[in-house]
Image 1: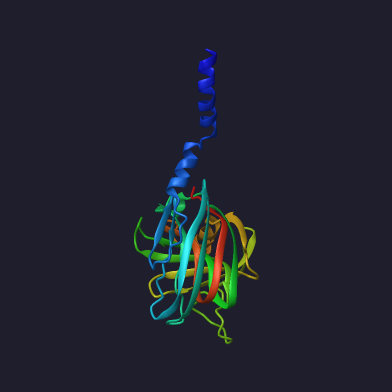
Image 2: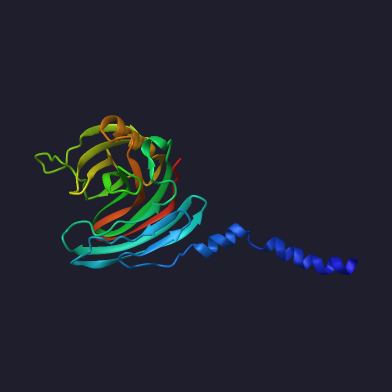
Length: 258
């Protein structure tokens, strides 16, 4: 009996030291390598990273991105970019997309808790934003009707707007809106294909966000004529660079649709 225990003891210690199945699965499914292709995508459980370099025609530069880690609903990732030239507009929207819980009517969604902690290092002057980007449609999986952006940072860029002041700056359709612990101005316009609503902080940059994204949709339903029967078809968060060089590092991002 004693000799059997001696044989079993090292086997037991190996079993105790072995990673849990969930940990093994996480290691096996998350691709943390760098991706630089124009339309590269990387899937990690409920999330998908898109490079989405849709506006780079005629531009000079490059952009790469990689996932860092995923734990439950919290993902971390990084993108490094350097762009100049082209049409002078946005070059890309490298982002993390949530694929779980979408294609529901707004009326069926009770909450969308989200956290986003990030930092950006840059060289010289950059033109870019850091923002959530949501789309709604008349049907599940249908064509976009409304785009809803929630900007956490405005680096020398500007929202789409239907009206501009004498100084050439966009004018908000509503000001001083209190949502998710911050104060916002709302801008409204069209990108030529669908309506665009953009919430921008009244001042400063929000590098640590924690709040309910659904409250922004509720505001548009209550005050801007967006129908509660619209379907949420896309939920993304990332950066839109136009020019300059920067690295955006997200240390913690999560979004859940309830």
